[in-house]
Length: 351
Ligand SMILES: NC(=O)c1ccc[n+]([C@@H]2O[C@H](COP(=O)([O-])OP(=O)(O)OC[C@H]3O[C@@H](n4cnc5c(N)ncnc54)[C@H](OP(=O)(O)O)[C@@H]3O)[C@@H](O)[C@H]2O)c1
Image (cartoon, rainbow, N blue to C red; front, top):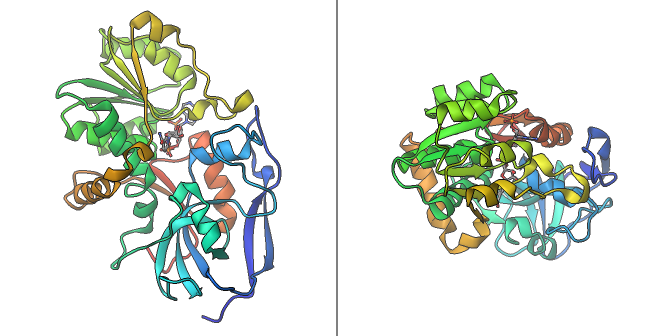
């Protein structure tokens, strides 16, 4: 392939805090690909992950816990890319790499830019052949799956027979976390935003039960299933759903806080919870991040890969195609448009 001279990239055009983002907050423009300098790689993007945490980097809040995207550089997220040309030691044309990749068809990344992107741990990792489906590197074997793994194995540590209510259960983290909890002997009840998603949880993933959290009778629905309340609430969403679940829990019980997506459009970037049910029910609230378990990440990825290979974990993906779909794929996460891990494929020849 001749070295491309033009590419398209997607940029954030303005921040949104206290209101939802829309497609209008993004623009995709064509521009030149600059010439490769020393310590740089030329990448063709193959797949991009869209993840809720990106929302925090689009608030314009300096004090958010991750740096804000600027309007002069493409947005970036975890992705898989093919090296087209390299002047960076350790990489050669033809390599397929995993790292923090620009929302661009083709991009040039310097060693400094690669090292400065916290989401990838500052690394561009060469993937060994034969490749798995690209969605696996971004989903079940990527941060999504590793979050589920450490959220269950590290933070929840379920005892056999314990009951876990899991929100965001049909999403990337939730669908894997629920399956791992079941492998460890827990009874899993998933919460999701439609009857169709609930059916996926019970029929495809074998969850004991699933409830549509949009039901006006959610409290009664939960109590009908679990009159004494669950032992654990694994919280992927926060907001009103979590306040309801925490109000039905047994005393004592524990809440494992994974994410608060329901609040990310709130003023001040969200993350605010009402701790009254925690006080009232004597709940233990614990949060976690896979970065707290960095030393164990390779082992977790190997275990997840084994579970996929032997059919003990079923992978669910929602796939979009082409760079222009990236903003919609990202925003659909907040609209509940995905089942399992959301991934955008840019090149149909691999994965
Ligand atoms: N602790 C960590 O280090 C870590 C790492 C990765 C992700 N996370 C967090 O984990 C959660 C799940 O992430 P993910 O990547 O797997 O995303 P995801 O679950 O695949 O997608 C988000 C899902 O959240 C649900 N949702 C959106 N708005 C909601 C609302 N207002 N109330 C209830 N549910 C809502 C939607 O499903 P429905 O159709 O069911 O509404 C949507 O499909 C997020 O909160 C994320 O920030 C944390």
